[in-house]
Length: 193
Image (cartoon, rainbow, N blue to C red; front, top):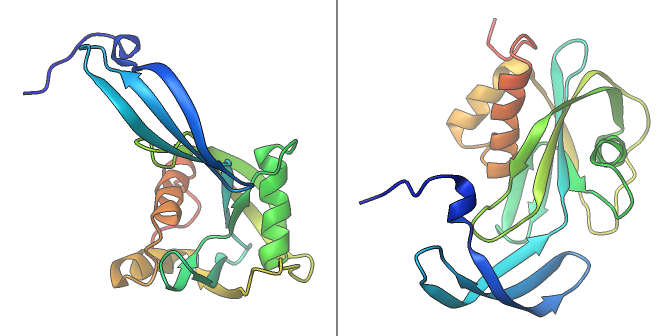
């Protein structure tokens, strides 16, 4: 039976020891010895921390959204998603969103912050920053990184729901960004006309 132990502060676990198992430029694997508020201890709780990232939903004046299709090795398949990318050290999330959108799609426009999302609160401490770019136009050619092989597909904003239902658009980060953007900017034209 679930019980309410009061304020969220009283539910916080105490970190007794933290050991870095592995670190590179993308991920840090830390093993923590933690004590729960009820006194139970977990000697090896694994945290896989990654850099914050941004997800961008660009919408052109005619309601088209550039989606990216690319191979994702974790999934072992090609995935359709919103453009996204890491926030570089010393860079704001908004600056990263502007840079990444231009690099992956060539698009730019008026940027609106939609919100922040927890990526995996059980194992990760990074955040996903969601931005909507309105009045987006193709301002440049994409400048892909050596690891990127991206196809940009323009989809009308009112067709996103159909892509979700069909299973063609099923990346959890993009789906969460879509939900947040719809709630933050409900009058953007999400519904079919």
